[in-house]
Length: 380
Image 1 (tube, helix red, strand yellow):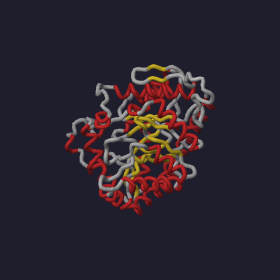
Image 2 (cartoon, rainbow, N blue to C red):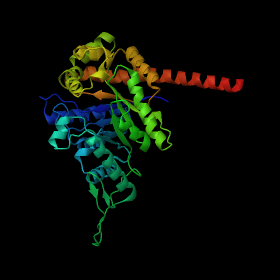
Image 3 (cartoon, rainbow, N blue to C red):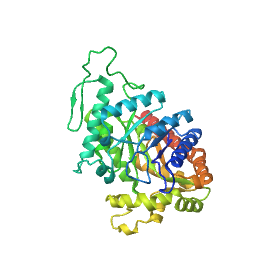
């Protein structure tokens, strides 16, 4: 097993930057990622976050498909409580045809209370998650079985009854029975990850803890869900999202990350949101820490993978070993137009230096394991 690289573009955008400038920057970033050999890029969706001003990731994806050759693209994710599943199933299928096999559908339940409030949704615990699961059920049934009567708690689907010639449900996805579906989770034991294991969806871990055991517990939830239906999940499908910045030295990487868009986005947006949502315990090195100790420098030193190629490779391999292995490392891409030279250097160091180090170490470990197994069989 080896690691491939992906990227998540929220897309972050400082509030003073125009929407059009941010859109073009995101398209430029995806084209660069494609040229560097990234296997996939994901684009977020939110409605009430000025730092993530993208309510329609599929519009960016449609443009990015025309500017790229190999990279797989998808939303991460469409927030299913805010879309009628039949309408979204058609949009996703249509985009899947446009992508000709390069489309992946990422979904989410929506973590921002402001999005939920804007849509005037029930704020009861797990309402958004229940809506998400119901929506997925309707979308996949429509794709696999065609139009039919479906009545859920939140939505309904009808069967086309007209006898007018030439009318009826017809838009199946390009990828059969449907494009790959990814669902993200952040907390250990997440129902999202259990569903991924049960349905064979792509599990995505939003990993924001310095304790890799918390991230490892995400995979345990995938395995629990898979065991319900006697599936064996594949760790190659597992995506882990981390912040990464690489420079020739540890000191330069830390300085660039802290004083660039990564640092500003965390300082002004991400850190206040995580703490405001009650996620502080996941950010701590120990339960005894006070939340007022979780400042930007703490984040840089404990949550980010920042440093020289040697340092970042070691951080990745520490997480790889502690979690039992994963197939995709998804980095966060920020709006970095004012630091383009340094950010592009970081991406090149990651692809040309860090990743080969990691995969060489994985290959060596795998070979040693096979040798031990062969020796044990000969002994038996």
